[in-house]
Length: 242
Image 1 (cartoon, rainbow, N blue to C red):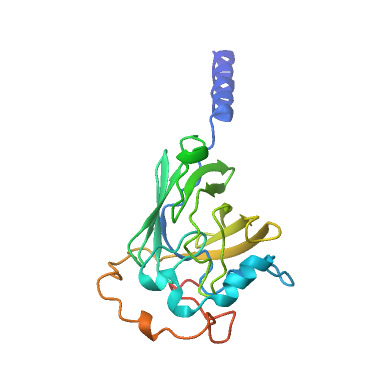
Image 2: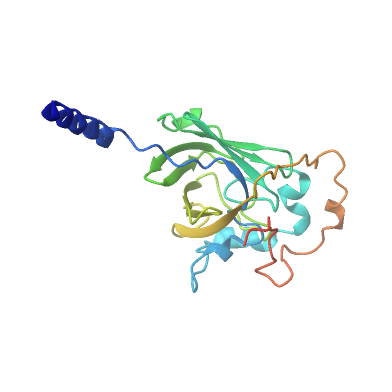
């Protein structure tokens, strides 16, 4: 009898070891996690953006009033608005729901599909995103962008060759670190990586209705080059997480 129980326990342990570990739950409300003022703020100390000459000319020509986000258009990737956003996680999809601008959303396919090929990949504001888990890290691979959004308020550009890989990992219960690798041979001389941290909202916090497109009267008051006072760092909003 004891031998039978021992063999049964060994079998149960073997099944438990072969059972896949469930992925972490990223569901929740966050703020931050991407560039707002200047994507270069996420570089390591001493690094600079490897803009090519054509992209530098585009950057130098941009003015605040030309920012697509100021006209209520989507922020693109990896830029975030200074407002909260929510992750909704399911077995087959992950959705990013944004409070700001037009209540837009990102859709990440988690069902093992590949990116569309050739003409089936239509250029869009948020691109085509496929995701997977590597241990406790959520990896999102995105291609198929249009060239209309800016990386940040400063106006750093990109082309339709843009390819972004994001790696989301928790650093404690309230910090979500996003390591972003940007590859765009049309605008940058080499790939570069930036890191931003999102804060998880306190329990009971909800995203709110935010209407931009109905009556935006501020664009005409945006004048001058795309710089921010004290550039590069204007403090971002906070959800009160210490």
